[in-house]
Length: 127
Image 1 (cartoon, rainbow, N blue to C red):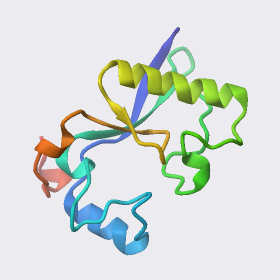
Image 2: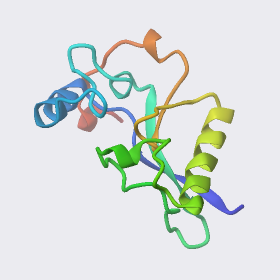
Image 3: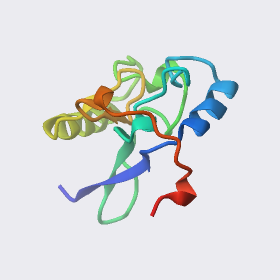
């Protein structure tokens, strides 16, 4: 198929989630820092599909981190091609055991994410 993955986000320090919550305190899009997120556990990934020949991202329902209803997997206003692209990403990720988030087409959780503790290691301290 000539496709690859582009990772937008994966591990996120808890302090960053606190900053995001201060801007957008909506649990549909940002985890409440009192409980933390799957990203804070290193158990989530945000990604998309890219064409390996051109490097271009495939058209998806929205831009990454679009916190609107249009980012939901079941949003009815997507074109057939956008739906195929989004579905292909979900199928490939589910085949590897990841669990899609219904409100964000780009977000996938690792199985057993709840067994990992919250982390607040600054990114610059990770090697």
